[in-house]
Amino acid sequence: MEEASKNLCKINDNTYEVPLGYRPGMRVPGRIFVSAALRDMVEPGTVDQVANVATLPGIVKYSMAMPDAHLGYGFPIGGVAAFREEGGIISPGGVGFDINCGVRLLRCDLRAEVVQPRINTLIEALFQAIPSGLGATGRLHATDRQLTEAFISGARWAVEEGYGFEADLTHCEESGGMDGADPEQVSLKARKRGRPQLGTLGSGNHFLEIQRVEEIYDHDVARQFGLFKGQITVMIHCGSRGAGHQICTDHLDVLSRAVRKYKIDIPDKQLACAPLGSPEARQYFGGMVCAANYAWANRHIIAHWTREVFEKYFPGSRLDLVYDVAHNVAKIEEHNVDGKRERLYVHRKGATRAFGPSRDEVPAAYRSVGQPVIIPGSMGTSSYVLCGSDAALDLTFGSACHGAGRVMSRSQALRQFTGKSVKAALDREGIVVKATSPGMLAEEAPQVYKPSGDVVDVVHNLGIATRVARLVPLGVSKG
Amino acid sequence: MIAFEYLEHTADVMFRAYGKTAEEMLCNAASALFQAMVDPTTIAAQESWTVELEGDDLEDLAYRWLSEIIFLFETESAVFSTFSLQLKQDEKMRLYGKIGGERIDLGRHAFENEVKAVTRHKFGIKKNQIWCIQVVLDV
Image 1 (cartoon, rainbow over the protein chains, first blue to last red):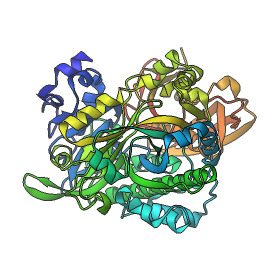
Image 2: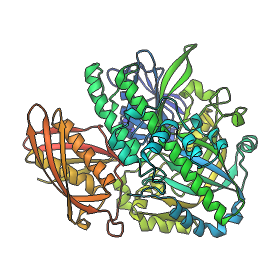
Image 3: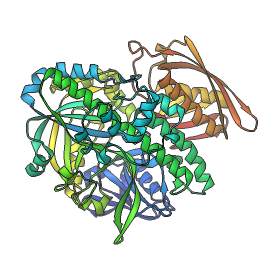
Image 4: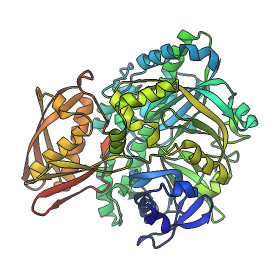
């Protein structure tokens, strides 16, 4: 690990540069936003991946990695890169298989002392109400037509079907649905995987968590976000399920051919890509947007069922949407580059958009402060709510971290922990966990992640996004 | 010759699978993919599924074969433990596979991972004395 760190040039306490020439073909330097302590946790492979992304055509400014960066495939996890519309590319390597994996935060009007005594019952009821885990299929039984509608209009479709409220939409990134969906780019296989899974949480690191607001750092912004100390919040972390995975798989196939066709030299096959404006690029974008919209619909439906459970146990309680963020997506955004306004394809893979007050994309309710940036902790540790800032626009194309970031491999985790031992440790802390496959808890043990507070400190100190509140888990429902 | 081995990878599952023939290597790769999720000794090959695929070359076909297994796992809600296949070459390279397994029963099949997809990161096939495929799975 020290080997990779040695090749990094320190720019300031929280910024390290991967210099041009770290590997041949780099068009721009890399920037890794970490503190000295986190820098030592960055694996050499992660630095290599930052450098690989820097070789892609049309990349602007830097190939970047957020403080939670770790080894991925194609881009590192925590990777951010923007490409010019003219001469640039789009790559599923910068989005990932779980397109629009993201996080949604709901605020309850109840205080923790009201909810906590019934946390076991509540988690059990949520676990029953929201299908999760392997092989889970939805309660929804969507038709083919409904699936197409979900691909085209995302959360808006869900609202029209009676899930959630119109007001929720303004509290989602992209209002819960991106423009440009092309259902023709979704294969029958992707439809077959996606249709039964609409309205399911999935497995792995996906979860639904009941939390308590433990600490408020910025009272003014917290008030704007509707958060107060001692309040109950619900966090939902999931994505586009098999639909997104298959859409990515299918288009990787097409784009692998495209790199040969357009003679693009890529250092990693997962960075398969196509020039923006080419049919292959348009097709991938159209398919990717379908998956992104599916994910927003999915989180919307899950939030609706969560509200139903709360209504049953706490009649009259409210669960309002704070915000819903995507952390695996490529989007067309305007940014200032060398004093000029340019349309860029910003890829965020394991990174959250963190726009400040100057951006029109921030919903009206938050325009005076900036968008909420939701950073889930690992299981059993704190999650954070931050506020996007205009400083992020210059530094990171308006991006921040997306979580804690893994430091331990899954196999190592399985050697050190068992599902049982992890559950027992959480029990001791009073955190209720319900999981379909308890064996999968081991590899999500809190110790396999970097301390989320350290990651958030870097983002805060750089001014990319500032701390607003810290949330602690009371109960978790997992796949 | 070992059938396959897992290598260290921080976030995902990486393995190498071997074979005296390309066919054997691909079957062992399928076993490695599945064993990353669930203990194969808990799976009875009660049912079988057939697979027919084509690709430009062996690497292309290998990627499709492993992706197809994930597709079947999800859409058939089934777990697999036996794999056999034949490769044929005409203007394309073709794969005819047979997969044995059973429907998922969470009471008996204890999952340690869920494989979402086969990545192309570090994906490659080599032949020296024996065939070897390297794969990184997204979990």
